[in-house]
Amino acid sequence: MAAGHAAVAAGTAGNLSAWVNEALRRQSEHDSRMTALGDFLAEYEAEHGRITDSEIVEATRWARERAVVVRGKPTAGRFAG
Image (tube, rainbow, N blue to C red; front, top):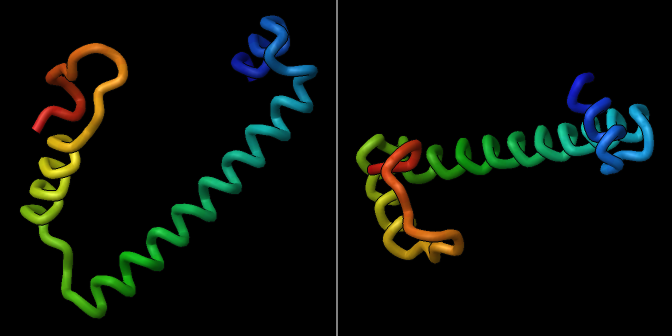
């Protein structure tokens, strides 16, 4: 609620109710996307077998190598491989 009050004070939300409604809408959309992703992964693994940790590491490495940096240089940290 503090974040909602801060958004209203900053003028980025019209009122607390509007802020809460927007947050609930985003959460609902997120939940729907996560359900769809879970369904996709279950179907994929049923057809192709379990996705291994090494496959995830390799896919992450592949994606990072092709990523376009838009804010300075990449840093070692949360996504370091």
